[in-house]
Every structure is written in C-alpha cells, then in structure tokens.
Length: 90
Image (tube, rainbow, N blue to C red; front, side, top):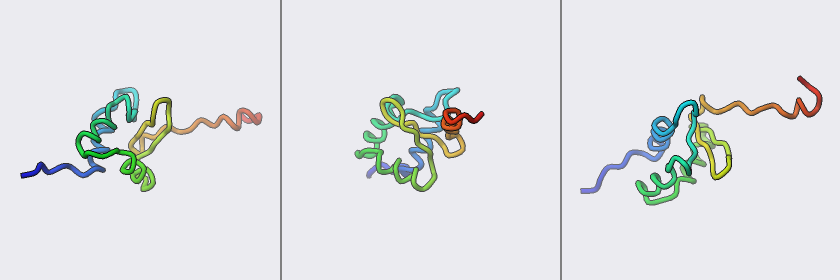
C-alpha cells in the first residue's frame, strides 16, 4: 500500500510556517533545505509548484542571493522606494 502524500500546495505552506525563523517571515528555499526536502518527498523539483502558487497569489517570492525567499502573502516585505530618494523626493 502506497503512502498518501499531502498536496504540494499544503507542503509549501506548511514549510513556510514551520521552517521560518524569527524575525524572518519567509524561508530561503535552498538554505532551509526546502528544495531538497520537496524533491525527496515528491521526486520532482519544487519550481513549477512554487511558480504556479506565486502566479495564483497563494505565496510571495523574492529573488535573493543563492536562490529565492518564499513567504505567505500577508508576510511579503514591502519593497523600498529608492527611486523617489534618487529623484529628490522624501
């Protein structure tokens, strides 16, 4: 009898909730071992699942050194407005 696996989306959301370390609100997909654990559990790369979830607004993503950070949508960092500073705004 084969083991019943949790849905890929549920795995991603649980990983974000359970692997993040305060004060960080997201996880680095490489340094947290998320990518390798996803591959070990499902036998495939996590990229297509993560890309689809980002497109559907179920998670947020930021490209960072060494990979990507993934977040729950409400925990996504607000981008800094450096352009207004460059152009002379406050």
